[in-house]
Length: 79
Image 1 (tube, rainbow, N blue to C red):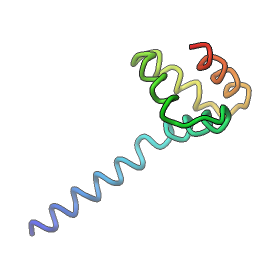
Image 2: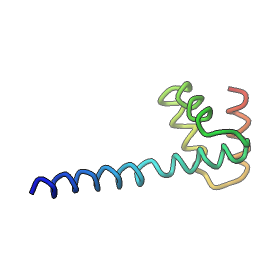
Image 3: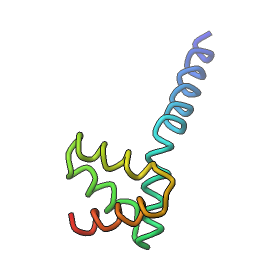
């Protein structure tokens, strides 16, 4: 019975970790490929922006338009 509870916790944790932040990771990966740099500095810069500004920046990155990605890259380089 305990193994069933532990297996449920593991499955919920893995699914939650993979599904919930996937849009954010995808947007950051697109930007890192555009700038040809690693993901870690981009995540660090977004964290330094603060919670509100970083969230707005990530919402801007979620837009599928190429011009939004270019503008986001320029904002990040200026930051």
